Image 1 (cartoon, rainbow, N blue to C red):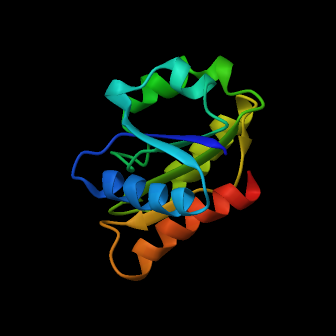
Image 2: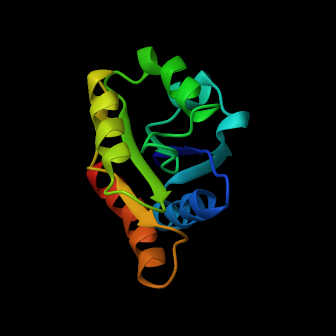
Image 3: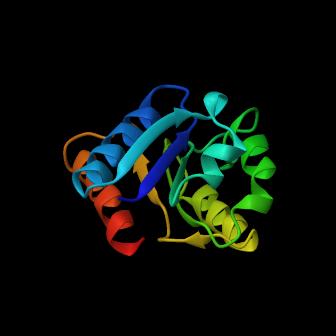
Length: 143
């Protein structure tokens, strides 16, 4: 059974909802899943997982959250090399530039990014709820 840790930051609850839906999908494929707010996460949570999923909404000028998530991502840069990683987040505007930049950043750290990242505009509802569950399932299939 694969250990999957989902580490996220959420301001309005949209990214948290995504994290929980993704956990449902991965759990349905037999993964041992933990969902952690980034404030509760540590480098050990990254090291101990077979697959790590990181979630952050787009902020400001299309960047990941800058007070907690960005410093955490920077702090684990040396332990994600070779690690299977997935990225997700919600946005209210823009075209997903923050996700493309985040994928590149993680690849530059040496992470094995499993897809191009999942983005959902605003809260996951209806079809996008199922997109989140499918993301969790696909991560397990790819991982």
